[in-house]
Amino acid sequence: MPEIDTDQLAVVLDSGVTVLDVREPREYAAGHVPGAVNIPMGRLTGRLDELDRSAPVYVVCATGNRSSAMTSLLISAGFDAHNVAGGTSAWARSGRPIHQ
Image (cartoon, rainbow, N blue to C red; front, top):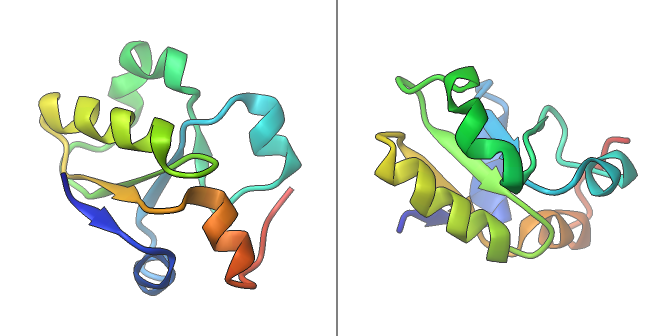
């Protein structure tokens, strides 16, 4: 499964890529990667049509476990999906901004 770290995400983030946060709404509201779109893991299969199949999708959660599973799901559905290792926790630990 394709995986990137938070340093790599920071580089591509400036190019307007889709960052998909699969955490629950309360987790997302508490702080997320700037520009991330929230579609909780349990609702993703019913909302795949909201994502652009022609562009890469970078999937993030709290630590990388849920996003790993959802990255596999997206790849199976024909997306160019990449798991963000360490998730939002690693993003915050790196000192990068968190939006609320």
